Every structure is written in C-alpha cells, then in structure tokens.
Length: 332
Image (cartoon, rainbow, N blue to C red; front, side, top):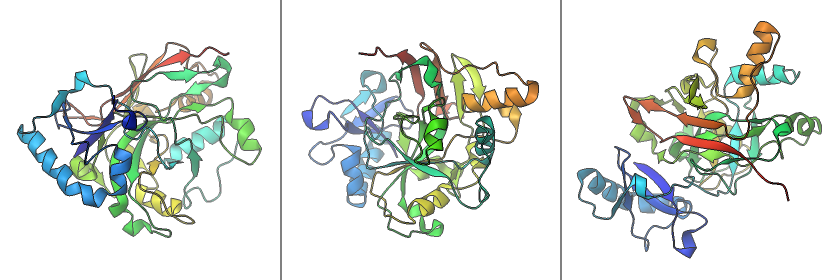
C-alpha cells in the first residue's frame, strides 16, 4: 500500500494534509471518505482499526473500481507527515560517520560499531517534496543529506530489535538538511544540534514494507538511493549497507521512552565504502577531495541550486522524488 498527504481546502486538514492512497503506477491517487479518514497522523493513532478499510480501498484502486480518484498532476503533495510527534535521526552508515567526523577534526566514538548515534530534530513544519529549501545565509553552509526513513506505530518502552519490525508502518525518503558551518559550535557546547538542523524534507509517497517485497529485509532497504545536484548525477550508494538496521534504531530510541504513533526515524546519510558509487551529501565529497588532493573544490548549496533524491527500480520511482530548489530568504 502507498500513502501520501495532499493539500486540502478543508480547514481541519490544512496543517496535516488530506490522506490519500496512491496507485502502484504512481499516476493516480484515491480520495478517501473524510468521515472515516482525515490525516495520516490521525490514522496512525488507530492504524490497526483503519487498516482493513484502507486495504479494501487499495484493492479497488488497483482494480480500477474506485471512483473518487485524481491524477497525481492535479494535486499538491505535502510531506506524508507535515508534522509529527517526533523526528529521530540516526547515523547508521559508518562510512558517513567517519568522513564527517574527519571533516570537522573530531574522533569517532569508541563504541561506534556497537551503539547507534541519534539526535532528536525538528518535527513540526516538515517540508514537502517540492517545496523550496530556505537558505538564510550563504555562510551557514547548507548541505543536503539523502536518507531512508520509517514511520512507526506506537513503540513500547524497552522494545528490542527482534520485536521492532511489527512497529514499522511506512518507509519513505528524507532530505535531512544540514547547516554545516553552524554545527561545530553547537556540538562543542555539549548540548547538540539545534540551528544546524532545520526542518527536513520528505518524499511524496510513503509505502508499507510489504510493498517493497524482497528489497525490504532485515530492517533495511536494499536499493540504491540516487541523488542529483543541478541535474547531474551525484551518487547512488545502496541503502542496504546500513550498519545498524531500523530494528536496531528503534531499540535504541525506545531504551528510555515509548515512541508515539507517527514517530519518524531516519537512517542517516546513505553512504558506502565504495567511493565509485558517489555520495549522498556535500560534506562527504568535500572530505574525499581533501583526502585525495588536499584541496576542496565542492561548494555548499547556493541560491537556485536544485537537489533531487529518488529510489528507482525497474523504471518505477518507488517513493516519488524529492525535488527541491534552494531559495535565499529575505531577512526582515
């Protein structure tokens, strides 16, 4: 099953968007009865109760017998969850951790291979797939980070990795926007990210794990995540190289707290040891340039730059594309 949130004219749904189902060919969406379904956020609160009806409508949509449909080109997509109870971002790709730490002159933690890294980011005002990336100042060092994410149901305190799979409701893509020049000072305080991690962006479509078939196994998406910068290929590392799976990340997140339905968990920047596959963020490429030649030639994002993130298999754009333009914002 594939879900999305679209802009709605109904006042009740202006913040969270209107929940729709998406046909597997990604060209049509099914409008849902609003007296039963409103936003994805509310539906996730009672997912098990709503799932039979959603599956029934999904079956009719695929068979061409659901009458309330719209072409994808006729609707405006928001982030699947425009606001959530929590956005928790991990850093499950060891190559990325090593390169980023080296870039800012920091040592990797001793327990890098045994304890996941995670921070809690902004979970409100989340950015849709085609909305601009607002750039406050060039000196902030804006970077994109192409990631895979999951949306959970309610996760009890103390949940272990072996039991985590049943709590994953949906899989999607994330652009975890980073302001690289602000991060070192914030980390040096010992309090962690705040200004350096503004709201992230999300793919238009979120899919249930069963929709991914064998490409979803072991709590990982085993497909390349492709990033294009200003129309040119930037990288396509395989997301299956996660050191810590989403099951591990859920266990770590639930160590001291339960997770609410609708919690978003990010994988961290997709990164592979094989440098030929390219990168999923600018800071990695900059660090590799420094290692290889001693000179950094890749700049951070500028006003007007475009970033596109997608996962395509057999010609199918599984999550739809995150396709954004950087826009300098005017300071008042």
